[in-house]
Length: 329
Image (cartoon, rainbow, N blue to C red; front, side, top):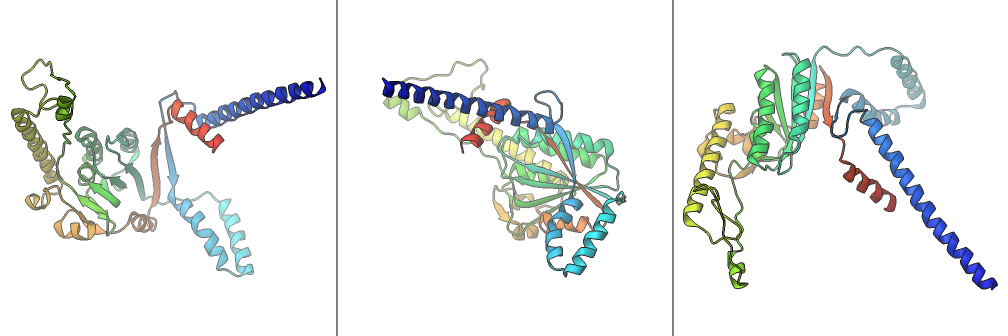
């Protein structure tokens, strides 16, 4: 009897422990979610918030430990004292301003939503003498997504603002469609540039379905509604029309680039090939070799550098999964 009672007590304790752990985990998630919403402001679900950071302050915070380590104890104490006095004095920021935007592109150019908000905010405040640095990183993607993103950069140029596109890693295909709108393009030596072409993957499972004894057909209204299908037998006429559509899109792509970089020899560069920036500069695809880090350090010498980012809150499902992963990791 004593043993059975003891097992019952232990079983109850284990169950209670599981319940308490679950309650604690849920409480931590709710608290973290509340903090996340607080950081993003009280905007409704789905809306974001414009964040502005002064890069000068971030650079000074980065360099301070090294500077202090190189000083003697006496000099370090004097420096900290001077910094405390400086902190009490409101900073006199330079009249010249450089705004930094980031575009980290995926295949659907989903970053365009944030770019639209950032550009709209800048158009309300930027002056003709201000500069815009756009850091581009994208291997390309959908025509409509990158076309819209490129149009956002054009909005800046239409207002007379100088835009410098910086490519540290890659600006290819749609990424170059976006970057070429800038007044100037700077790229790191081994950044991937170019890929001015159009591609549509055409997998086809018709032979497999045929071996399995499965028939497939398209019911359409409109002679050319469906040019090709993953499951239907390849249609020479449809393939020919699809190729014509690709050529038309390629022509539009080339015309877009020619508008902003008229000196380019498009017959040489619009072949779908890509090059490292050290070669792309010879072809006229970029204007100078430099990393965005060096560009911003140079800008800090004579202007206030402000990083502008429109941050959208993650959907509830994504935040929930993220918090659960953090709890169990």
